[in-house]
Image (cartoon, helix red, strand yellow):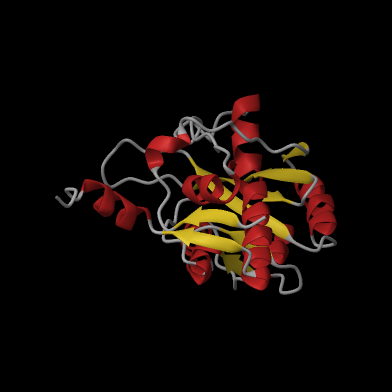
Length: 217
């Protein structure tokens, strides 16, 4: 069955969609020893989704350092509490790895933020924003891209919460894990559609213009 996708997804429709959440196991990492074990597991996987979270600053000109690095396989997501463990040698080993593809969104910005903690040479990272255009999608936000491809909503309610809290809430953990896992889902679907061509791209702006034209008399 041919999939219908849109050049630009109507933001007003997102609130009507069912909410999607990461279905797997979430592990919070607090120590260098746990970090080593987590990184060893992650680098044994075939593909990973990545994202970061930073405590929001409501003071103009001031920005906090990255608080959380979340990395997900298809089944398990690890939440590395960087504000507690820092950029350990194993974190750097992970970030510089060139063997496992790591999928992110606007990852260039995340790299710049992580480098403020410690300099490193980025390994094999793939930015979704550089690939959605290959099938005609113009949106660049994770929420819109996911809604467009899957008809489901990624909630953003925890985005501006305090990511430096001593203990993250279950909602924060699920939000962080979902964002990382969603990157894998999107990448898989983009590659499938690109290879099969089994989709129809709709230009909503064209339809809106046509709908607004007066009828011929």
